Image 1: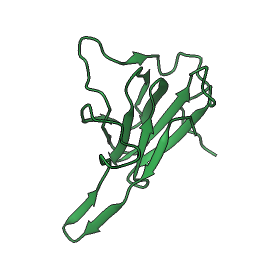
Image 2 (image 1 turned 60 degrees about the horizontal axis):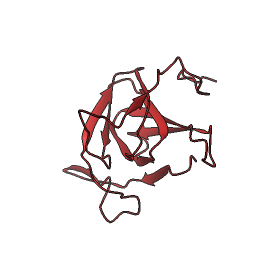
Image 3 (image 1 turned 90 degrees about the vertical axis):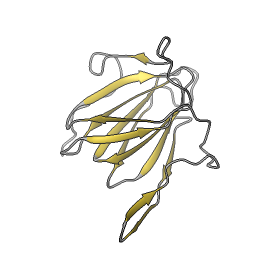
Length: 151
């Protein structure tokens, strides 16, 4: 596991009315502060990658569909330098994925319908000076291929 990244299993509480799932609480060990909360989606097969933040921690939960979330540790001083982690979040795996600053990340919708991720980052988005640094999803020197792995 990439240094600083964490996974929190989530408990889904269903009843005859529907279901409830807590994602992140201020008394969780993983809680590091609140900046804002937003939703992002991807259509089947779409890759949204790569980027990192200098200050911000992300907390991803996929609440619809299935999203393959990939982390790449380019931090030269990290004990997990150059490590890649894949996580499958969503309908069949309700988890919260905590992503530390300076770790590249991206995702791909691997369900047959639009997948929806809720993120609770630690920082408020700054429209004038975004804490977001991007690299092309396919044209880079990362040891990762977004293609489906059959076999």
